[in-house]
Length: 219
Image 1 (cartoon, rainbow, N blue to C red):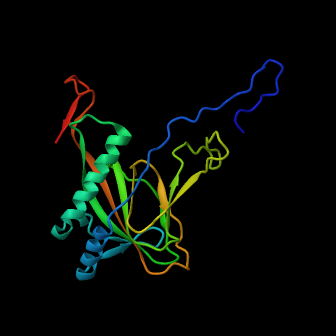
Image 2: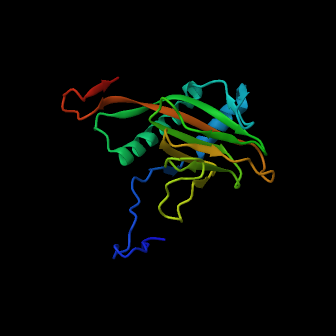
Image 3: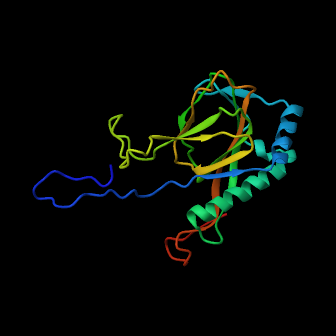
């Protein structure tokens, strides 16, 4: 498709399209021992859940990582999200992210998670605690969807949705504004899909950092 030619006597050159502003998504495999710590906690503690849109369940507790037994998990996730933030955003050296809320997601076969983004957050993350090889997460294009089927995607090879396998132990980090969903879980999957999601906020200096009117200190 690129470049293409406009059939017009007044246009003598082919037109190219420049793909602008990619969305950075971080993917990293977390040590297996970390997942075992979470599973051990789940097996020894009663977790209350509520039904979500799409049929899956989310924990009532939105501060899951504040449990003392999971302090090591929270620290690893905090370090990981700040490494992503440094590479993707290149913030002021005194600017860090911290985890605000965290919760569990549980899906059985046939259940899904509706399309959504995370409000009041800078970077969001999901850690897959227990999954099947067919589990996945879907990210939607951030391009404007004008009338349902008109989406700017200059290259025909660029999909409207990007699928990433939800592998056990995989941590995915992304801008909180990026829409995502979980398609219906195949009936061929074994076990229960369990993941841990979290949101973040900023502490430190944002703006130019020069002390002017555009500088804000967040603690």
